[in-house]
Length: 88
Image 1 (cartoon, rainbow, N blue to C red):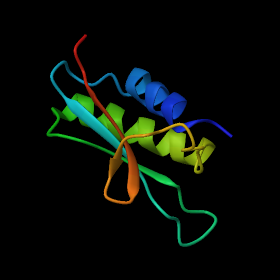
Image 2: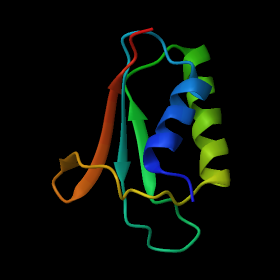
Image 3: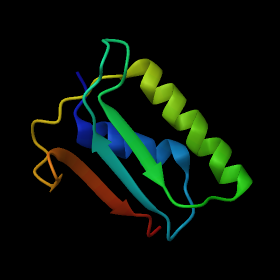
């Protein structure tokens, strides 16, 4: 099982978001086995970046719906969370 940190880095590379975009990946409790254990969100995107974002999320959800959140220490309430600001 892929770690949450590795999946987050894979997403950052695949999505090619514009510099200045913040990205948040948050743990979630799936209600069914087929649902992912994570969600990713970012701010407003131009159309080309939005398409890359959607493709990256879809591909990663298909391949890695569940990730290991064990090493993630940052929390927002009860959920573990990973944040980044695209700087380059």
